[in-house]
Image 1 (spheres, helix red, strand yellow):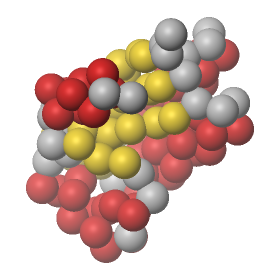
Image 2 (cartoon, one colour):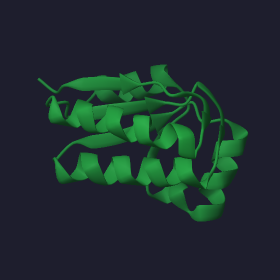
Image 3 (cartoon, one colour):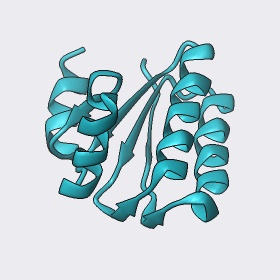
Length: 106
């Protein structure tokens, strides 16, 4: 059975929050989670440090053979992704419900 974990950062994902966020994803990967969904529902803003943390989290997951998905990104985060072409790097879903429909069909 595939193992799924949902990580839910909140507030502003910046340099101050980047380390704890990366650590949480790393802990999930080390505990054997094969699928990690990062739900941005409660993230109001993300800067370049937050984006860097997200890219490192993706590398951590991939190096362990796990997959990282995103959902519920707001317009500001979406614009940052569009400008940096990260929207092509990450698998992004509108919300948790959409992701779960996809996940359950795997």
